[in-house]
Image (cartoon, rainbow, N blue to C red):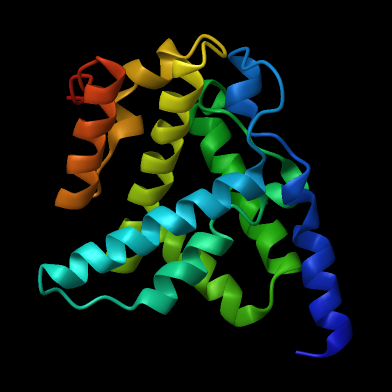
Length: 191
């Protein structure tokens, strides 16, 4: 990649640091709330912990791929912002998927687009780790904001999709610990 292309990628992703996570804003989180970039850092930290835990139980995992996916998983939001769950009907999800792909293809170099696509597909262990880390980080942030009395976060606690463990026992254990700390229970799974 040329230096000019590298500058374009950095400039293209830079808005992630300024854009708040819309779900927090919509639920009345007062004061400065988490940016998309801060969320990405949190997801990357959780993903690193999951990589270590998966390896500790004897399973092979490509840690570099996990970290690359974690860093890129919300890249499209640099141009479109964070679209919150309540707005995501099946029709909106389909339209967003196309828009996200278009943005990512215009923003990232080809191999990075492939990494982003792998994360979106969630078919590999590495991609499932990133998706589970995405949800765990979000619920840890909900735990923090709820404990600070910063907003009405019942939607977060009551949505079974926010506790999707992607088949990872490490994620399941973290979700159980999160709800225990919050004095809550996991919501019933969707049937």
